[in-house]
Structure formats: structure tokens, C-alpha cells
Length: 194
Image 1 (cartoon, rainbow, N blue to C red):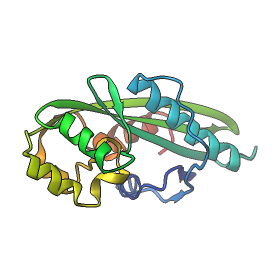
Image 2: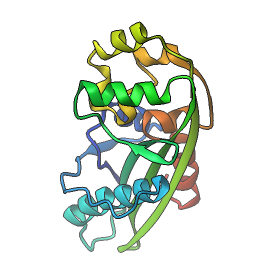
Image 3: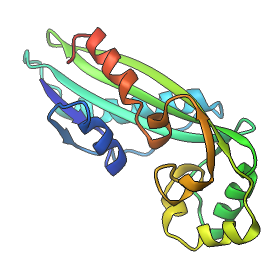
């Protein structure tokens, strides 16, 4: 089997590596088309777009099994999606909104694969609730002074510096990092892809 991760995320690479399979990384480069503001619909659609882009670049009608894994993560607070911040003020607004409260992180995963030479698709999503301690203004400013908030949905990475402000989670920790590998493994096993 040929496994391909359609993401350049170092966190997803590390998580997928924990499954013990050899895989290639070919990041999707297409423009993301968002047609919904419902977090679960957004992540499933974006994961499908990524997986399909790479699958169709690599697909041949031979009998080798190709498995392309696309994934996307969004942070949602009070049913509003918090994307990657555009600047410091945007990051500050996001962190100030989620501190002292609960928000959700959604990760969608799409498997595009061949079954006896025929393309098949399976998509799912996971949602994890994240509780964040109240933060002082100084703590918010100190966090904004790091490089961490600026390339992450919701302006934070749970596995980084921000982890000290996370009071707890309800759900899969790896969903928040960017790839719910336990569910992915179970689905791949069920589909005969691992």
C-alpha cells in the first residue's frame, strides 16, 4: 500500500508516524473553498478537498492500493470559527475570548483510497472541548510575544507554551493537535487499509 499525507504539518506528520506505517508527505496546495460556517461541515469539506486534490494527482488504474489522508482543524468559540490570526491584534482578540471559558476544536479527516482499482472515500470528524484557565493581561501579552500564536487556528497550540493555560479537555487530545490518530487507525482497520 502507498500511504500519502496531504499535509505539511509537522504535528500531523508526527501523529501519523505513531501508527507505524511508512508514508509520504505531499501537501495539498489548492485554494481552500469554504461554503459553510458550521465547524463540522468546514473541516470535513476542507479535509475532502485536500485528500481529493492529492489523490487525483497520484491515482492510476493499476491494482496497487493508494491511501491519501487529508485533514483540517478549526477552533470554534460560541459557534464562531477562529482561524489563524492575521496579526497580533487578531491573536489577542482570540486568546482573550477563549480564556476563562470552554471552546471546541474540530478536526475532519478524509481517506481517499483505491479498492480493487476503484476510488473510494470515507470522511469523519472529531470534536474536543477545551477548557482554558482565566489569564491575566500580562499572561496574554507574554504569550503574544512568542511565535506560537501566529500560524495556528485559534491562535494557540495545545502542545506548546499555551498548554499551561489549558484546564482540561473533554475528548481526544490528538484532535486538538490536528489528527485524531486513534479514530483514524480504527477506521483504516475497519476499511482494510492497515
